[in-house]
Image (cartoon, rainbow, N blue to C red; front, side, top):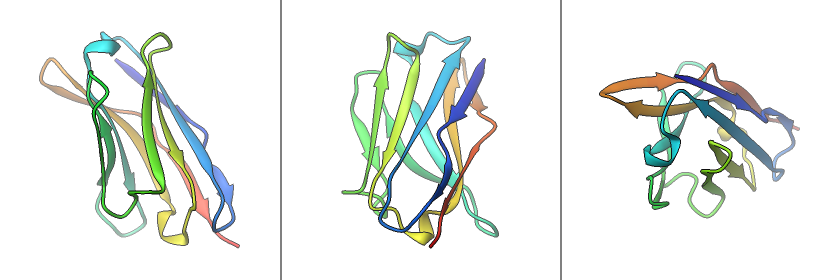
Length: 114
């Protein structure tokens, strides 16, 4: 199983980023997928999740600003992040659980700063 994130970078407050996670080695369309983040000195936290059927769940801190979506034809899950705040600065990780095991991507850094 391989999860490869991309799309991070440096953006000013109020700006947007779109993260992508390309998955391989799993039956993507049958898998729930998630995005987590970890800021320096803090625990990793769930940001957004999407079921195989497309139902979504977002952390309260990002509701109204972030959107998670998936493209089963491309085996890719996305995290659209709008109205970014400095407190959104973190390494963002893609996550999948299959056959009872957890898999993580390598992470992509998103920095929100003026």
